[in-house]
Length: 352
Image 1 (tube, rainbow, N blue to C red):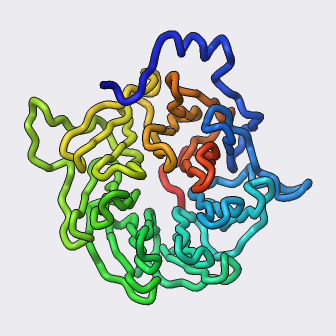
Image 2 (tube, rainbow, N blue to C red; image 1 turned 135 degrees about the horizontal axis):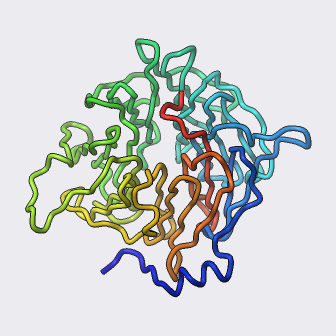
């Protein structure tokens, strides 16, 4: 069975009915927002009548799970911004970071927020316990140039935070950043860290371009998904270089990756992979961002270059961002499944 249905009728209808949306964008970046489940995205970049975030490269987005009107975004050079009205307007924050790759919010106390980025050239994690007003550094890399490229928080313990660095380190704190323990060292940058929704002892780490390593015992041991033994007749590996990864919000063992040769899905913790039936013209284009809707495990959103593809009942809804930047991050509203945010950035190798 194909994971998503795509029909010729849908593709023809898309052209005739204008399903390819051109949100009133510009050649700049910032935030795009959909309120209809991904069929239409529009820019939400206003600070005030004279200022905008449209020229900022957005690297991370986090929505407060207890107040979905409150949104934080991390940027490449402009520190971070916060909205308290659902992205209608933004105000500047000051964590003294650049290259803010990650923002995570403690789901049990949303006044506690973690951000990762560069502080005076060194990768750091900062923590706020007052909703983003004041920040303290709780982790720092020992040398210049290494950033914190990934971060995630335990869904059952708000004091347990995992980080991955551009130098290949995976580390964890069990006490909200007061101390850290080393878990694993990879050969390349750890670009994504995700916890399996159905098995909180399972952690996946996307290793820059070429592999995923997983731990099934809460970080005690790790194994390479690429190097797992497989039956060549029935258990295929994904194809292409890895650019993005997401996991099912409700089904254990489900991983989806975006590559430069399409989108692939595993239902068995990475043992076997099958291609997702995506729009053919996106195969061969790096998939920089991919997410599953936390309210609907069957809805996938992915970005290829300057277009965004959202699975809908009759195929794919396609949005042209009308920007000269790529979609780097996709975030779903934790309360309203119809609200999706996109963060745009310049198409550069490094974000810091």
